[in-house]
Every structure is written in structure tokens, then in C-alpha cells.
Amino acid sequence: MLIMLMILAVTAAFGLNIQIKGQTGRKTVVEKKIDGIDYLAIDDLTPIFKCISKQEKADQRLYFHLYGETFIFLDSASYYTFKNQSYNAHFPLLSESGKYYIPLNFFTELLPQHFPQKVSFASGMLRIEDPQDYGVHVIVLDPGHGGKDPGAVGKKLKAQEKDINLGVALKLKVLLEKELGLQVLMTRNDDRFVSLGDRTKFANDNRANLFVSIHTNASKSTSSKGAETYYLSTAVTSDARAVEALENQVVDLYEGGVEARSKYDGLDFILSDLSQTEHLESSNELAGNIQQNIVAGTKSYDRGVKQANFYVLRGAFMPAVLVELGFISNPDEERLLVDSDYQQRLARTIFEGIKRFKYRYDRIRNT
Ligand SMILES: [Zn+2]
Image (cartoon, rainbow, N blue to C red):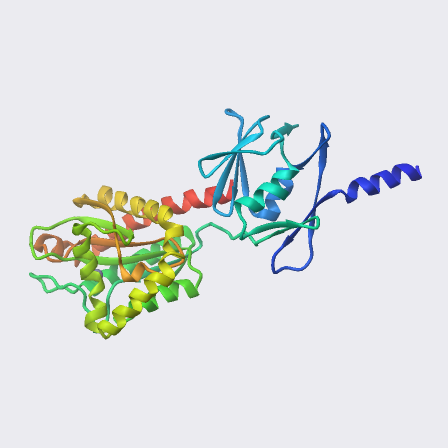
């Protein structure tokens, strides 16, 4: 009896100790020996890693999402895929009574190699960075321009871009709060001037999950028409460059010109690498979802998803897009854009795009 208790105690002590950086205490995940090899049950790890695993029984795959990346394991195989490359875990993924087990060495040897900044293993302790929640909960809506900066001005009705942007954003806010329960923060709620840098700073300070900037387009030609959605890039086509110049000119006109511009250009070097590059793929996806819904829901001419170097998107540490609702310089579109019902329709279509994006990201988190 005593020997049995001792064996139990010894067995129970075998486990992987995990410590989340910046937190006190540790968690122990008990190992399971299968064919003489140490394994960990994926179900025991998901609460600690806040990761999700999705089992595809049909093709015998295990999807393991961690820190925004995906590992794909194949049942009974030692190989797994990460960022489109194949790796050898030396021991196979095993399933027993409907539970998946990953070899221990994957966590102590391979995971620290895949996430050197976030995961380390030393002296029997796996130290991990607190995995963040990738779900969409907080969104910043950014109605472009405001106050002394009217934005583009219509030719026929002399409508001001700042008012249209705000009108659509306020309607969108109501939908996001009521129907998705999102926390919606506005860079401005009324007709006031906010610098471009303060807009992204506001989003970063509030740890927003998404940043959506709303604008109205303008062109010298009165026949230019349609909606387009942008995400950030420093590689710009000449077509996009015109819109970029239009939206960035606030810096010259209202933020002190050369001095402010050099401030943003400085920001570019410091921040854009760290911030938007990490989110390019999801920004592109969000832009696509919004653009598709605007076009389907308003029958606007589809100018597509584009990339441009907008100051207001730089330095945003989250997926960020800029929507151009339509052309204020086109008399037909100007008439539509000032119409409250049409603004509501635009808000609804942008809402649908954000909803689709949110559902996908929340599913990655929660299934
Ligand atoms: Zn604008």
C-alpha cells in the first residue's frame, strides 16, 4: 500500500510546469506515457495557452491555434505544418478515447523555436507569454476630418465630407453596439478637429481590436464614382496615390505642414513595421469583407480593395482599414451621400462586413 502511494506521488509529480510571464504561480500539466514517450493532452493545454484546437475527424487533422498562428498535425504522423512549412516532431500525434495527445518535446523544444520571443524552456519550466485574446470586442470608428478641416466638398450641394463621415459612423456605432454587443469608441462624436496621429493613438491607448476610418472620396472629374476600401501599404499604385494625397493633405493644411509631415514620416519608420505589417493579412480580409458588402448592399460601382500609405492608418496596432464611401464630387453620389436613409444603408453594409470578420475571428478563438 505504501509503495503504491509512493508510486502515485512520484507519477503525479511528473508533469510539465508552465509559468505565464508576469504572473505568479505555475500550472502543472500531467504527462501521460504512451509507448514510453511523454505526451500531453491537448485539452489540458488549451485553457492555459488560451489557444484553441479544432479536430477534423474526417481528415484526421488537429488544428492548434496559438499566438495567432496555426499548427496542423496529422493523426499518427510525426510531421506537422506551421506557416506553410513542414516540421518533424520526432514522435507522432496520438489519439486515445477521442482525446488528442501531442508529444511533450513539441512544447519543450519546438515551441520555443517557433516563438522565441514568447516561449522559453529552462530548468524544467516552460515560460510563456500571456496569450492574448484574438477575438473582436473593441472597435474604434474614425469619422474622417472634422472641425476646421471639412475634408472634400461637394460641387453641387456643397456638402462637406466631415458631416457625411460622421453621419455614417454614428449610425454604424448603433448597429455594432446593439446587434453585436461590441464596445464602440469614436475618435470624434461631433464636429471637431482631431489630428491623424491622435486618432491612432486613441485606438492604441484603448487597446482596440479594429480600427475603421470612414471617408468620402473626391475627384476632379465629376464622373468618378463608386466605393473603395483601403488598407495600409507603403507600396502604392498611382491610382491609389491620388486618394492617399487627398487624405494625407490634412497634415499640410491643418497640422502645420512640413514639420508635422516629418513627424509622421518618422513614425513610419518606427511604427509601421511593428504595427501594420503584423496585421496586413487581417486588414486585407476586413477591407474585403466591408467592400463586398458595400457593393452588394448599395449597388455602388466597385472600385475594389486597395493599398495606400495613409498617415491615419500608420502606427495602428490592430487591423485597420479606411473606407471611401463614394464620390462627393459626383453630383449623383453627393445627393445620395447626404441622404440619411442612404447613410443608414451604408452603415448597415459596413456593419455586415465587420460582422463577418468578427465571426471568423471569434470562431478561430472559440471553437
Ligand atoms: Zn477624407
